[in-house]
Every structure is written in C-alpha cells, then in structure tokens.
Image 1 (spheres, each protein chain N blue to C red):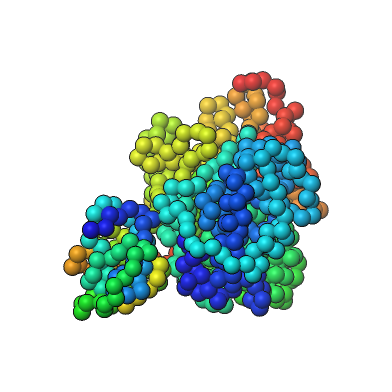
Image 2: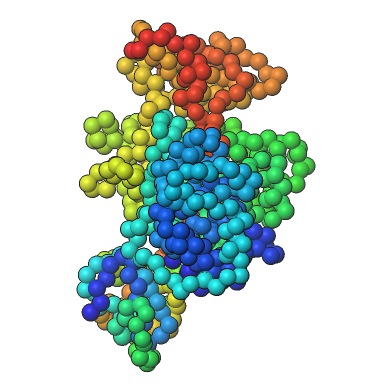
Length: 503
Length: 101
C-alpha cells in the first residue's frame, strides 16, 4: 500500500540506485507485483533473504507483503549451521540468496532457493498482476530474528499495522525533495535497514545502498551520489570520523549531507562531539528504538544536539548523550521492578506504548501488558523536560554489594580519557561482593595509561562503588557487525578474572 | 451507511478521491464532495462535488473529525472535500520530524 501510493504519487522518481538510470517507483511497484506471483506460486509460508542489500531487498520486501507472506531478513554473516537452523524454523519458505555463495542453505527440507539475479531477471520488464492484498493490517509483515547477544535468537514479529503506524506517524508522504538521496549501510536483517526502505519510499527519497560497510567507501559514495541523508550505527560513525580526520582540516568534508541519524547502541561522546565539529552544516539525529517497537520511538533532534554541545548547564549538556524525547505517537514511562512508575530522574526500566509497538514473538505470548505497555528490558531515566537517557540492557547491569551499577556510565568516563579508544565494563563473580567490576580497555595506538590512572578517572567522576576492581588492557572488543558489543563473549573471554564463585 | 475499520478503502462517488481508514470503527456517514463514499471498486455514478464540499483532497494527507474518532489517509486526490455527515474533516497537520532512518 505504501509503495502503491508512492508509485501513484511520484512514479517517475528514482526509488533506488543512481539518479541516472536507477529503478523508478513505478518500476519497483511493478517488480514487487511480479515477485508476489512467484512467491505465491511457491506455496511456502515465508519469504526470506540471506543476502547483502541490493535492489532485490525492496522487491522482495514489498513482493512478500503483496503476496501476504511474512518477510524474513536473515543474517548472512551467521555460520552455515546457524543459518540452516533459522531456515528450518521458517520452512516451508523461499529464500533469496547471494549468487556468490549458492551452496549455502541447500538440502533443507521445505526450503526453495532463488538467487538475487534470478529474482531480478524474473521481474525485469514483466507485467504486474492487478493489486490484491489483505488490507486489515493484521498480517505479519516482518519476522526478524533478534541478534541473540543473550541467547537463542527469537523471531520478533511486526504486523503491517505496526509498520504502517510507524511510517504514517513519523514520515510525511512525499516529504522529500526530488534531489534528496539516502545512503543505507545497515544490513537488511537490522530493523533500521527495513525502516529505512519503508520511510524513504513513503517520503519519495531515493535510496542508495552500500552493501558492505567500509568508512572510506561510505565517504566516497556520499560525495559521488550527492547523498543528503544517512543512518549509521555508532561503530560506523567512529570509523567515518577517523576517515574525515585523516583528510585534515582542508579536506572536502561532506557538504551535501544535510542529515545524519544514528542509533543501535551507545554513542561514545568523543565520537559525536568530533562529528559535530567535522560536519558543521549537518543536522544530527539520535534515534532510539528496538526491533519490537518497529524502530524509532524517541529521538534527539538537530537543534537539541547543537544546543547541548554549546551549553554550560550540565543538565542540558548531558542531553547530548540522551535519546531525546518520545515521538508524538509514543508514550514512555520509567518503572521499577514491580512495574510502578518512578520519580523524574530516577533510574528504572523503560516501558513504551504506541500503535507501532509489537512486543510479539513467534510462538509465544505477546510481551505487551493488557493496556498495551511494552517493557523494553532497557534501563534508563527521564529528565525534568522529558529527555530520555538510555543506560543499556537491564541484563547487563552489574550488581556489586547489592548496588546496581550501569556499565554505560563507567564506559562513558573511560572513553573520555585521551588515551582510551574503547572500553567496556562487565561484572564477574566475586565471593564477597556478588560481582566485581572489570573494565576492558583498548588504548589508542601509541598511547599509554596505567590501570590506577583509569580507576582514578572513574573515581573522580562517579560514586566510589563504580570504580573498576580491575582494568584489563585488550587489543580489541568483540562487536557484531551491526555495532552491538557482545558482552557475553567478553565475559567468557575474561572469565579468569572472576573468582569462579557462582554468587 | 458504510461500516469503517482500519484498512478499509473507500472511493468518492463524485470525484477521483480515494481514502484508506486509519482510525474509526462501525457505521459512519463518510462523505466526499457531499455525497456518501462507496466501497473501493464500486462503480461511480458521476456527478460533481456539492458546493461547500469542493475544497479538494491532497495525496498522502490525513483527515480527521474534530473528536479524532475518524481518521482517513488520502491515497488518490480529487476535487471533493471529505466529511462525516455535513461536517467537513480537517486536514491533520503533521509536525515534521527529522528523518531518523
């Protein structure tokens, strides 16, 4: 439906690819229609994709919706065994695959494979069917396996009504000018990768895809394609800042980039501050959301970034690290362990409510309360003006001597030390305290700092029970490819630094 | 009188306007150009929007009644104005949000 409106409203605009010779909205609509016939004929229950971003992504995303089948973007970086396990969970299904690795996923019961090129050849120039799809909105649009940083991946389920509510609530139809172009470098299996397609199609903004992120390629593509907006995860921005810094003060910068949004993890303040300096004319947006909430539920806007950066008031300045305020269509509250709301400024769990919030997983009861609230499992607090500060996953909270300690605040202090490139704080078993705080620190090349110096830095800024019991210097920290720190991996790598007690 | 539910589509009987229901349920006297709207796909019998209901609709805009109990999204524009009974719907002004994706 969203694409149909785009094709009707501005069918000749380029939807995808280079401004000269890219796929138009009308062509994308026709292609999705042809793809839907292929998907229906297959007789499966799902349409999946285990491939990099390409034109096949929007074609299969909208084609699956047209056919009334859930679309399942799979993480192609998983091992063959992990990928096969997920594929069996959605069988019978048709899976769009990378033509460069055609042998993955073969021989699984009920799974048919179609290469990216096979799909695009099929839809090229063919006549689409008459539009016919379910308009109730109840059908499942997307099943997204969560990244599984804390265990077995769960299939979060987003219905058409959730995604349509998100798009209608946050995007103005044809709100983009014809010269606008968005660069999408997050992979299809990240909710932001899906939201980027939907939002930009509805806004009429041309999408340019960067299938494999590399900061140098990203910068070059922004310049070559006159990109006006982009979304990145924090680890990507850190690399982009390094590339721009290396070009020196007389470098060409990114003058076409009007808007840069980021989200999907904690942004180190040195990175965002430097990015604000390097890109003085770019509007920065911090978007906070989860897969289960159809992407963004709160955002920190461009003016709020610049205001926070320029302010001497510590409360206003702290907002640079906040997720901003909830969307007008979203309610947010902070609650304690018992589900009761806490006072302004007090930490607790972030709960959200709104029509875009799904909170559903395949094969289990919805996590929504009867009155529609979703507990995110993210910790946070809200300031007096309604700015939401996200402190991290509740599961990552370190409990030392009965006191809750958020790793995020310790990490924030550490990365602000000039010698520190990256840092993570975790809790490991301790007979006396329950957990002891271990800080894993990556130093900048050639820089040095002692363990005591870093512990003192934390002690100067935070309450004494936040001081790391031990600082471990490491070469790098484990991240997944969408920039999430893999704390579980780090805990197991550093398990020898605990005392082996089970608390 | 047409029965509304989110996702149901209606077409004007006097112009090219088409809408999809975003909010609203049950029997509602949904009109366009002063004439009752028809279920999408129904044949229109022609005619012109009535005076006072000929302001036109805009593609991609949302229209609401004063209580915000009924909300429709215009998926094809036309010359008629949307209404419930004799009362016209208001254009819902969306506060522009910065692009977040």
